[in-house]
Figure (cartoon, one colour):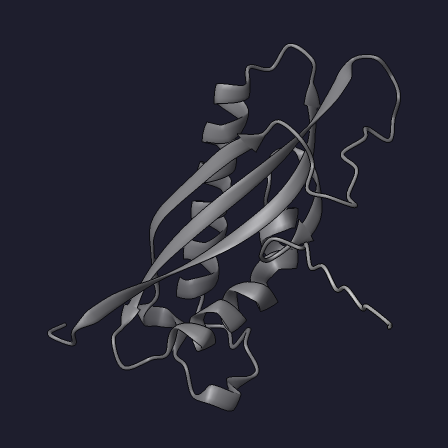
Amino acid sequence: SDIPRSTTSAIYTFCLEHGTLTPISKILRDTNNDITTTLDGLFQDNIQDVANNWNVDENHLRVYDVSTVWLPDAPDNLECDCLGGDQISACSAVESTVLISHHEEIESDKIRYILLLFAPRVTDGLKYTANYWGFVNLQTNREVTLN
């Protein structure tokens, strides 16, 4: 189509449980592929997944890029601990930046809203057991000084 397109990015953060011998490069590659496959499927399935308050047709959305990076430390106030404690599993914190191509007239906030609604499905679509931490970095600091 000749409709001008734009891109919007969003960040998912996860704690992934995987085998201790699984190379981090494989985990990152698998996560990129799983997120791409899940979102593309959701965009193209012709099922109205999103409460259409904003009149957004998902069929024109495309995954432009997914880039997952390993986080050496979990975000503040979150722990990435394996639940099994079986000594054959390891857990890694990762952050996935998703870049979505969409019709230019649709506001980025609407695209981010759709991605937020799809987060549980994205998490379920991952190869590795995942704990979804959030859509964006989760740290906020509030200081109150009383005199």
